[in-house]
Image 1 (cartoon, rainbow, N blue to C red):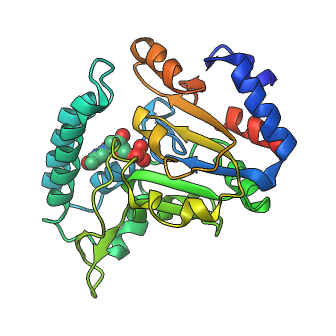
Image 2 (tube, rainbow, N blue to C red):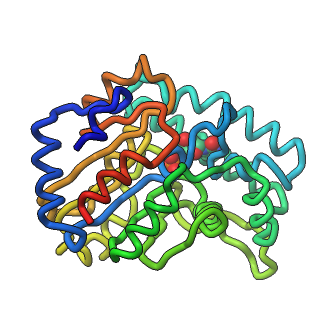
Length: 284
Ligand code: TMP
C-alpha cells in the first residue's frame, strides 16, 4: 500500500505486513474487528501547536476549583515522564501508574463533579478527535465492524467526546474507567478496578464474552500509542491475522526503535487518521 511508503510511517517487517494486509483485504469487512486505545490514538496529541487534553485533562481544564487543577497537574508532571520513559520497563513503570491513577481518582472524589457538568467540560476542552476520525467511525459503523475502545481514561468523557465531535454508534464498545454517580448525579467513585496504561492485559473484558462472541471475526486491527496498548486484544484467541499500528506522538528519536520492535506499523507525529483510513478502505 502506497501510504506505508511515507517518511513518517515505519514498517518493521514489510513482507509480514503485506501478507497480513493481503489476507485482510481478501477476507473483507465481515472478518474484521478493531480494537483501539482512546487518548492520543483516536484523539490528537497536539492541535495547532497546543498539547490536547486527555480524558483526565478534560476534568482538569474546567469546571472544578483551581486547587484541583493544580494538584492534578502536579500528579501529571510527576508521572507522565515515567509513562513515556523509554529507559524503564513496563514492570518498572506499573507501580507508578497504579499510584498515579489511584491518586488522581482520590483527588477527583474530593470535588463535586456532576454528570451535568461533564457535557460543558468536554465542549470547552482541548480534547480533539484526530482529523479523519469521523470517517473512520462512519466506515466501521456502515460496514458493521465492531470497534472496542479500550482506554485508561474516563469512560464518561470518552462517550461525550465521541458524541459531541462525531457519533456514538452501536458498533462501539467502550471499556474504561467509568464514574460512579449517586442518585443526585454527583461523583462518588469509579465503577470498577482501575484501568491504567499498563494493565490492559488484565482487564475483565478478556474474561467476558466480548472476544468469544466475535470469534468469527478472525482479523484484528489494533491501534495504540503506548506499549501497554499491545495487550488490549489478549482475550481474542481465534485470530488468523493481527495488524498492530502504533502512534508515536512524542519523544520520537528516543522511542522509535522500541516502538518499531513492538508494533507492525509505527506512525510518527501525525495528528490524522489518514494512514488507518487508507488501510481500512482497502479492506472494505
Ligand atoms: P489511554 O489509555 O486512553 O491512552 O489513556 C491514558 C492517558 O491518560 C495516559 O497517557 C495518561 C493520562 N492521564 C492523565 O493525563 N491524567 C491523569 O490524571 C491520569 C490518571 C492519566
